[in-house]
Image (tube, rainbow, N blue to C red; front, top):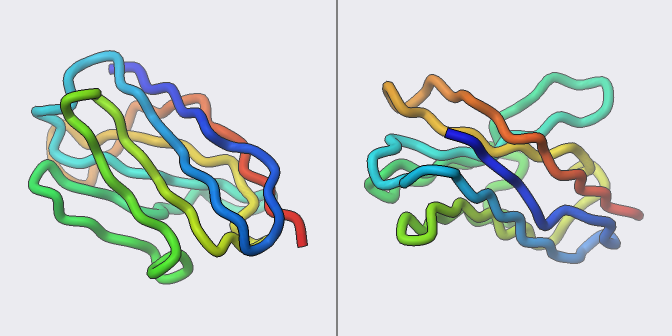
Length: 117
């Protein structure tokens, strides 16, 4: 499966962005879909994930500000990001877990999110 992210950009602190990730194949059978990010000088981290059953998980740093959702009819994963902070600045990637619920891969090319203070 190939993944393509979009929706990144430059936004002021406190603003919002909505990221999208379109898959090249049906997402109906995909166990979990997730958003990750890599900030400059840091390792990639899981931001949020959603299972085929709709169960969501969030990192503590984004809980209450970000909302992940998936539309299997459109083969698309979303990340609504509100109350953005400068520390949210990163390249955001989407990925899928097909064989289980935790082994993510492949990866999209990523979309840059920059939050100015």
